[in-house]
Image (cartoon, rainbow, N blue to C red; front, top):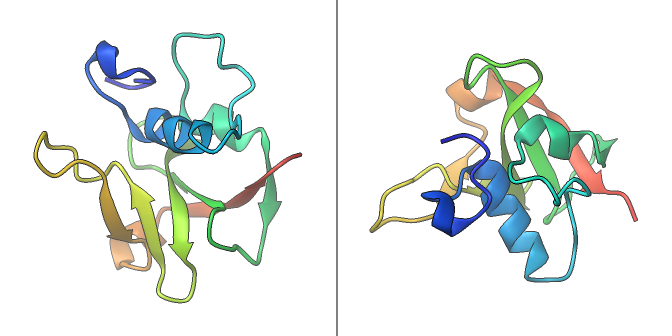
Length: 118
């Protein structure tokens, strides 16, 4: 399910996961939160692009699903090691996980990085 923002909708996708994480620290990453769905591209539109990402910035990818613009996102944990926190390991037992966005498959789909607009 794309746009899963609430756990009662059957689970969180990457956008729902990022919204939940940032909501826990009081940061609204998607001003369109009144809608029942969200997605990576809409979140990307509210973030300022950056070339020097820091932990807590978002990393956006394209072409992970057949859609226009950003189709996946994660939270940068360590830029030097290219580690992100995301929902990539979507199983009831594994939950969210760490993903190496420096791996060739992810690098070929890297769209950019963003920082919250305050």
